Length: 369
Ligand code: SF4
Ligand code: SF4
Image 1 (cartoon, protein in one colour):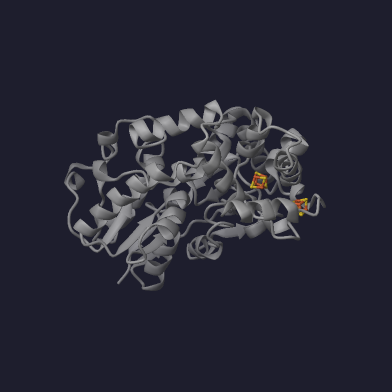
Image 2 (image 1 turned 30 degrees about the vertical axis):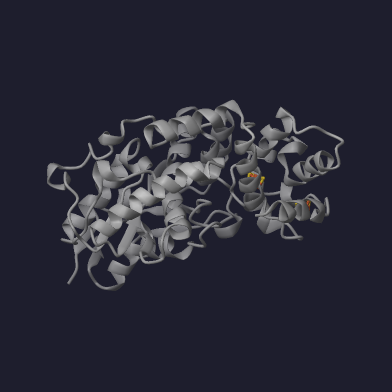
């Protein structure tokens, strides 16, 4: 977004306040500067020289989960996520980013992942037969989240692929962060370096189709990588295999509610494939949250790094709703959502089983034709 487009958006705001209704941050803090309307009014004053671009305004720009719920409610079509990326880009250039965001950016540039883990340990969870990437048209892009704090998701996917004897490769320690967290923080130069290194590796192995369980990686691979690769979220990829008859499921008599994460849902429009995959499992009873698909709330996960207490409060609201639906478990397709709910569950009295969708599958999968 150019500076002119940004200014145009600021002056487009009709100050109606509809952007507040689905904003999980505003619903917790109650602060007008955490609404898009509040930010537009503040930015107008900055543009007209009535206010300096001080820490309070910078904080208001970063205190946002970039979930895009406000965009679907805005009658004038203001896209604050796009605006905030341009604003963060500018603030990064001016060295005005908040300390918490600076720390995250430093970790990402120094370690190549957001978890401050050694880069060459990224493949440590892999069985030894995957130690060296092999040539294959199919690549499982594991993601930092699935390689470090959540490798039970990656292990589940590996078990499914092995059960159906699917030909694929993994990069292990040679997989770089997809670049998504740095793009979100406004650090585009470093993220491009990561994109270039990954692309070089994909080409070296003859990769044509890439699937990942991380919606942030999926969104980045789809929008910032070469279109020569077919990009799929793991739920799309597995649903294809079900439809081709390569995967069959055993019965799983459970009442499940599916939670739509923002990256996969509002940002990429993937709502039906995870549901279709769950419905393909015999005896699953799938129910819905009152607010689902494009109206689903954010899980709070994107704020875990900068505002963890706020993130947990936001996640706890969804846990309560799932509990009130009387389900056996809540299933999501996003590691960040899963971690946010698990963090909230640790400090909450609400007991709900939470699963990232691939974690359900290994005991249920049978090889098809
Ligand atoms: S993107 Fe989400 S968190 Fe940010 S202002 Fe919009 S609704 Fe609120
Ligand atoms: S909904 Fe859109 S137009 Fe209305 S106050 Fe929010 S940003 Fe402005």
